[in-house]
Length: 110
Image (tube, rainbow, N blue to C red):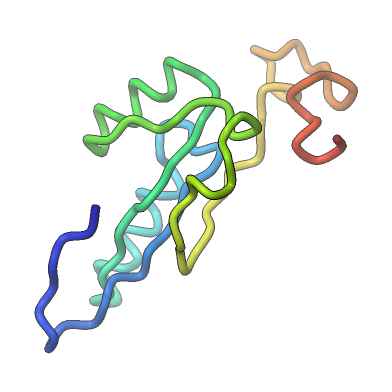
């Protein structure tokens, strides 16, 4: 999953991207890393929304896995940094502003 790097270069900062949506946090991280001359590498991403998965795949060339609650923790690779978007569907117009008390907030309140 990692590309080899020369010993003279700084090692990769490995990150995972949870509730990744279409990749806004990842894009921001990659742009900041580029500016700071750091090397970053995505090792795992996850989003429950299939349309977001497709957009993320189009944006970054890798499709996120689905529902994070169904992923065995042993499957998630070692990483240095965790990016995580807030699961926004319960709070957005598209989610009818249901807020807490639905199945999508149980990542916080099991």
